[in-house]
Length: 246
Image 1 (cartoon, rainbow, N blue to C red):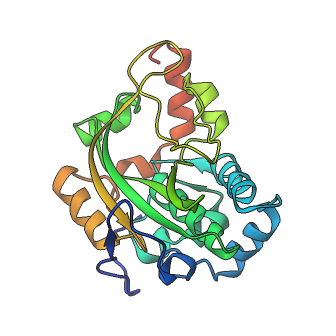
Image 2 (image 1 turned 45 degrees about the vertical axis):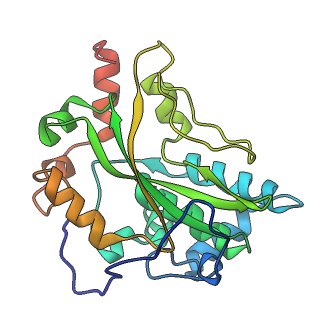
């Protein structure tokens, strides 16, 4: 796990107004939203089921949400580690690359897509994460925007259903008509997540800006010596649930 790489990466990606219409870039492969990668193309072809764009987008949303484990302990802030194809090849991801994969898969089947970001307060991180981060603020949380019915609709495919059930979270469903954002409360009525600030939408993952944000807010998370890399997010969740810490 590292934040340095010899691979090139986009230093910026165009930011759009919320109501802007699709541009050619929203159907095209990008450096990190690599919709032309064979693994992404195969994934999209297998899971884009349905007779119209909404049905295919819904099918892809659930395939990304539940087909790849959410794991914030193993993040790699490099071009290779942040590609959409990396999620398919590794079988896991965190909110940013999973949102990128949903965008890439939708582009691969002709649905305009882009990625968006917001800063959120997450009240249900693990004790190990809180100790490292020293904050409950998660900067550059990722989601996807899809063009359906002549408008952009948000979809957030981060937390897989198994994790939600173990963590006592409400699974984040999506109907293809309305925005899919994190629930403010968990199943027990405890505060779960709140949005603090929007960072806009982009044609590709703005890796340089995300790196700057992580370095400004955190010490160690995502770096080469990140102590989270030696631990298991799933094991920590299971232990805290068993001990009544959830």
